[in-house]
Length: 311
Image 1 (cartoon, one colour):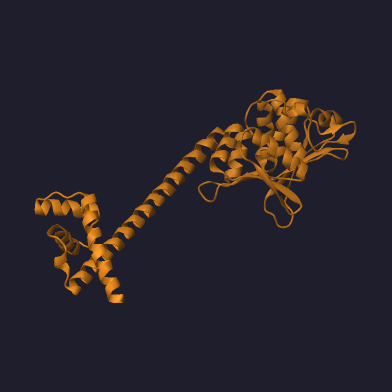
Image 2 (cartoon, rainbow, N blue to C red):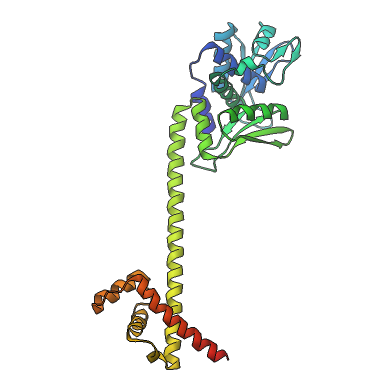
């Protein structure tokens, strides 16, 4: 079972008050319903959604729709569940703000989403109808709703963004995709539609992936620092060898010559490690800053020799 199906199965079983049921049913029938003929027909490949719609119609409007199950078209192995009813059609459509004075509405009236609880219920209905969400364990973070008009896509974005979810939409073929990409925002959406078990699963995976990514970044950063340190040390050894080859090592004072000997002896040591080694082995404490200062003198002399040789 896909993660989308798991979430839909969970939220389709939630209990809600009648006004929330109306908001949820309005979104479902608006998106997967055919109601411009003599009947209301809802088609879905998800059995949980079919059971949910059946229960909402029966509990809210005392309507028992006819259920038909058939195989999908074009070699689609999934079953299609169809619920159909002609009873109270106009009353139901008017109550769900899908019909007004014999005109079908693309956007429902304000009373359908009058407060935050109704907005949550409406979003739950949209997700049950046309929503999908990637399993965070298997792929990138992504949640989307595929709707039929740009006006409606803007309407859905507006509801989502009332909850600060940073929703956006794009045209996809003949439809419009409303989507969320940010991991935290998708987790917030699951909370909004009351998918509690899905939230726990999602957040566990998200935290694990974030921790893993942070560890990888730290490891990469640490490796980059090691590579930088090794490169700097190899340059220092090369400069010491150039000074020795030129026969001018005695131009350096004893403390600097001591550092040159230890750098050649421990070519892979960091400055901190080298300062500790020199302090322990010679009994003369030297700080990392002091070591850097002496290596700078070696660099200056090597640079001077290089310029004279070029001249």
